[in-house]
Image (tube, rainbow, N blue to C red):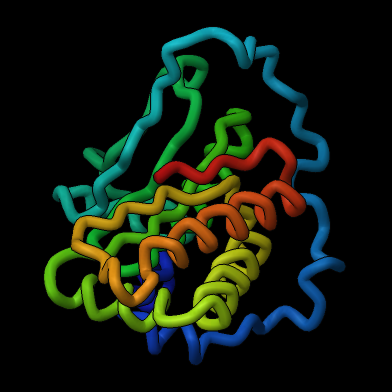
Length: 195
């Protein structure tokens, strides 16, 4: 199996800033849900079930874009019970493998990418992102582009470090969450941002 073709992740903020989408016009990308019938789930029924697949929690055999030949790879059998699926790793940004995106969409289950910051590196990353409203919006726009390119239904935003209160980082975090939520809802009205 080609080891270079697996889930996309970004280890740090600089990698995200340098990333450019290779698709000339994201708006021209076909609707990835075309031909998939809507599920008749009642949106008002609670509770909701989110399956959070922790890739670094020893589920490494299913990270390939074309699936896995490993007979004991992680699998889901009862899709009808899952309200949202989150592909999680401990990289700064994780994009689920194409095989998981397709499996979720085939089963009418929204799939989320992950943004995580933790420890001292996470604190430094948040300092870079939330240092100004401009850098906050620029980062959010990159995340929205990744949402479109990889046909995601939203994001799990997991900040596990302190934010610098005097520098306005908390306020810019709120700006980020509001901008991201609004922008991904424009891409997909049923998208989700969980924080």
